[in-house]
Length: 79
Image (cartoon, rainbow, N blue to C red; front, side, top):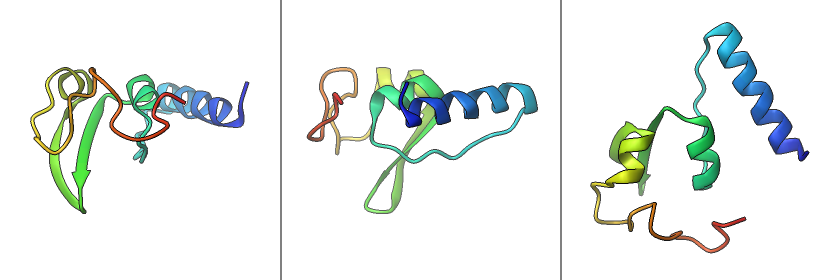
């Protein structure tokens, strides 16, 4: 198991046991799906969308990025 996976699992365990929240910044859609309940999408330092992870992934509102569920929008997104 990678160090990243171990860290994320520890964070999720602490979140469940202690009821704490995290701000996690990522461009990794798979990780975002796994760990987040809420998503905030930013573009050039401005918030362009926010909502539940399921809603944002299912129906993105902002025209600057393609729907998350169709294809990755940066190089290496599948890693």
